[in-house]
Length: 539
Ligand code: OOB
Image 1 (cartoon, rainbow, N blue to C red):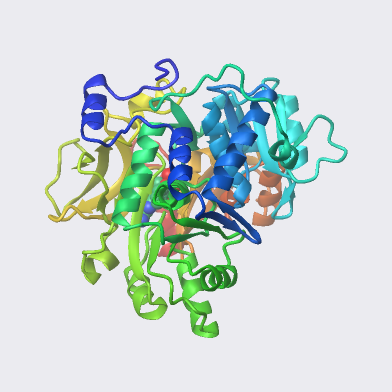
Image 2: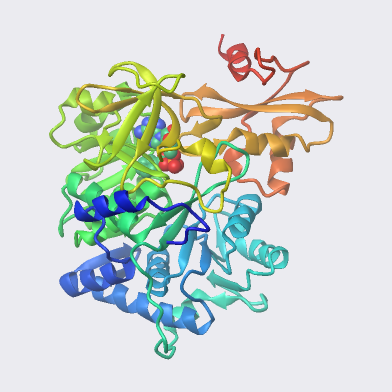
């Protein structure tokens, strides 16, 4: 463990997690070798016409690891991975694991501002992206990043690199027959395996250090509860770098069970339904805004969803009445998923009754997950009462990566992560998410750090003060709205969007509406009163 960069678990806790079998001392590189030996000829991955067996995936990851090593990549190096859903994401991920290099998960929608922070904060030496995706050319972005961060000297593009000096083609590296790694420096299970980006609430994105031991536990326990096995076929609808899609149980949970991952290159229900019928998909994971789209497309086109047994929904609050329609209309069981990149995963269980499944967000996946629900004073509240959720456990981080003082706010002195979520705990241990105290907007699962966006808005010419708040939205649960105090004519939402795009801010963070106000309402302690701002729209 690298104590200088991130706080690991106290020795006593680590010993306990190992003794209980939550941590098994295996790296993802070793795990892939084991799966390849066990499930060799079975299909691991399907992406369009590409079908990789476990043996194929193992070989491809091995070959790519050698090629990356030949380009100078070493154990501990951080690599920003900015790939959308495709088989190469998985191959690359395992190639990095074999080397002990650390993928830094960027989301497909992230742009220069977010990816730049990832590079800077992680000290990444390499960037891997597609040539173009969703009408965005990643190559100028990669060139800009390379110019801005001298440490970033390796750029790998999955696609065309013609005219881009010094960029490597991922396909060439995958095909390369590089020499065996002369002096392998294999990672250990307690090492950093990946860095996830936190939704954040402080204006500066925080990186989440996950180890082989803890992340494998996350995936394995999720897979056990979802009863995955070699016959499971998982449809990856949400972005694969998202923790939900990656490990809850997602790609890693399915692979450790010997099942098959089917890649959906776009999240539309039409694509999903075609793949479900063709590949006999048994499990898929969605965020709440996708659910009504699935229900509608299902009613209109009557697709063959007969293979689908489990539909996971999470990342934002699923409305109870939408939840109740899932099983009758789609014929698949619902599972609610309340998780976080920092760790704790809550799932409803196969044995839970319909009321529990439709109205709660599940309960922790590990018996050693510790959950506290505390009031403002910091004291625990009784079951049934609302408080902030604090948690600690074998796959929940004890601090962010290279975060220093920020960790003292985000975690209690005895290592509990302050989730910023307001929940009620039922006597059964199930949690109901009722709100949050963090200054974040959850746009249908995509998290927006209000402070971060306000920093950009304040730079808009003539803006004297800016506040970003989440307002209720029928499709997304909530959407960001900007309140601005302006010197002169206030800008239209479209102009603000163009400004943010120019600054490299991901599109999902752009305010849906811009509302000019004379002045900001303030709370008793002089902070902008966001509740009062929201009330002006909803009253
Ligand atoms: C998942 O992870 P993150 O890191 O993008 O966001 C975590 C936050 C939670 O603290 C909570 O505020 C919200 O997202 N959230 C939910 C929820 N699931 C997540 N709020 C209400 N209901 C739910 N079911 O979003 C994530 C990670 C792994 C699995 C699933 C989701």
